[in-house]
Length: 103
Image (cartoon, rainbow, N blue to C red; front, side):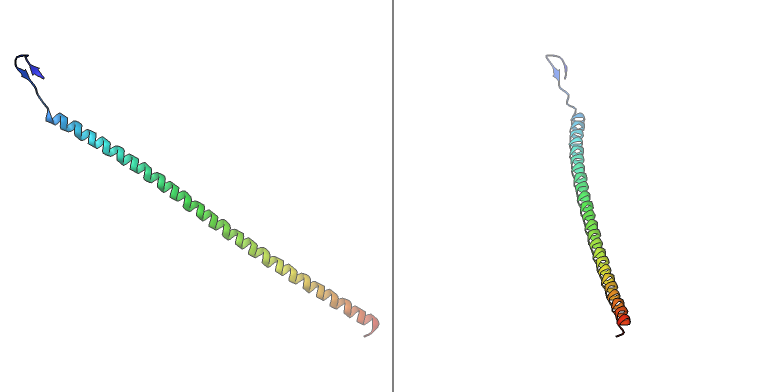
């Protein structure tokens, strides 16, 4: 504003108003972009954690299954060897008794 009381002069600067408006729009857009970026990063981290947890659970489950399988095989082999040893001992005892009594 300028001039005198009798002849006031009002100047409007459309360029300045346009710059302020553009800056405001730009700032608002950047805020929205940053908010969306943070939201997407949080979602990506959550998904990565979920996938990591699932993978760890699958690995643990597979390891448990393999462990149980190995234990079952070891027990079966131990039982087989025990039975074989018992049968061998019975046969040897029977053979010794037959040798002693001559049958």
